[in-house]
Length: 261
Image (cartoon, rainbow, N blue to C red; front, side):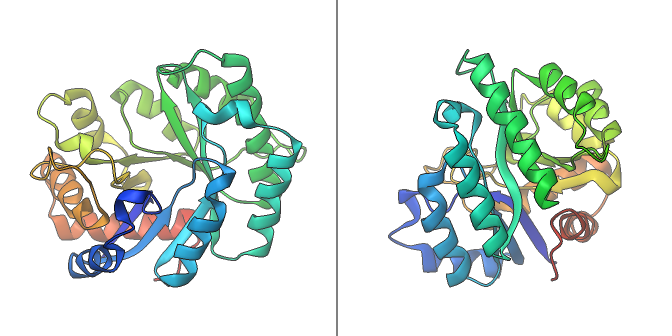
């Protein structure tokens, strides 16, 4: 069974002391590729170093909505420069809107739409973070077109919305990625969403070191090996085998991010 974890943050300090052991565990679990997301430009060098240390890691570059106050033309130039120069960059992200932890709506919108333009210019997908902002993100994506009239493509990561909202983004051509939250007992809307999302738009992730899935929930650190628990839960919800979900989500990840496994 081959798995792709489409959203990790293993450059964080909690992985520094035992990253080789963590890698051996994800390899044993059948994780053949990881897409490393990014929060802000100070991470670029550490993420790039990991991607070149471990051949099975690709990465994204971008500015998280909770860091939108850092956005400026220099940030855009840094993102473009690294994305153009390193073939291991496969996406722009994570970008988006977060109105749960911040209310600087104007700054977030500016950074979000500017990075959509960068992604379109570079022909890269986007990794979108959405929290208490699904309707606003739908509106932005629905009206956003580049100069050629083309829409952006990408993934709604760590899905936390409703089945109705899923349909909004699938209709816009987006993939939907499920994390460890789909295993949580009270996450009924997320589970309902995982059961009905179109097969060709389904992805899985850990978002590690956050949101460890059941049966690892409560541990201090999530890690890529645990993406198999996400696959197993999604399989249960959809009445399929874990092997089928692994194969499907691996194929979808390869198509979205241009990966060769």
